[in-house]
Length: 332
Image 1 (cartoon, rainbow, N blue to C red):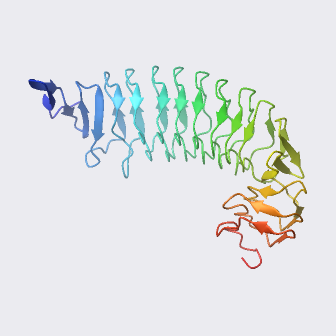
Image 2: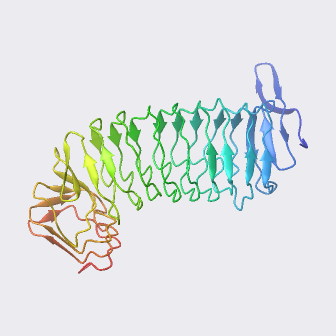
Image 3: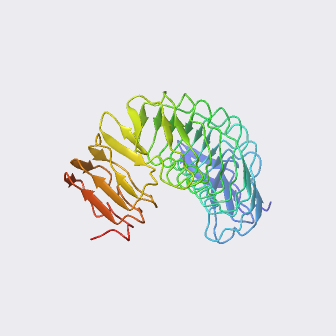
């Protein structure tokens, strides 16, 4: 590796200068703090397909997610402990293996790495942050170590090739849109999970069935959507029940999601609020006999064959997005 700059003054403290070794290699990657910190990557110089970060680097602040990045292989040092956001965003990486000792995966680390097929995580990982593998459309599987305590929102969003994962036993929360429009076919929500966020499995058109255990005490709206082959939700969580292909929050009398394949649907009489009835390609008419409040800003969005909604008891909460992308709806 060619070094182009050496012994740069980084800062001054007290009576004298603090001189730290700094250099930039032939590919425009700059290192400071005696080589312990990868500071930045020059987008004009970094054009290689395979790159090795030298041993001794502990922190990466620079991102390799450059416009028109060609990086297909990255070799990370065993000393690496921290990376900043967007580390490899949009890179054509095929594989990434994180070293033992790393405890946290940063936000959007591999977002839109559309060629990524292999991810190896160390046994020291405790947290995967927001959108880390969002839009990794070719990622077929991933082993999540038991050490993981938190998986944030949108981590596997649009991972179209991802068929299934085993959720780590320590996690208690499924973040918003965690598997949104992914290829998930089946998943076990284990009994340590207590909260399910918004639209976790919405658009998962290969999902066959979902069982919500009694350990769950909080469920947000839109967790599933209607598609061919979906058998529905079995819910053991207290305070929620399934009725007429819909999951209902008993305390708030709120319809949280509906997976019906009925063409003409009647909303259950116990429902006084509707949060989400979106992404349904089957329903053509919806009848609501009782007064109802819409609590979602896009409650019926992308119900592509919906042509009529009859609010017989009146409705509040309509927005400009309530019927977004409902091309067949009368008076839309």
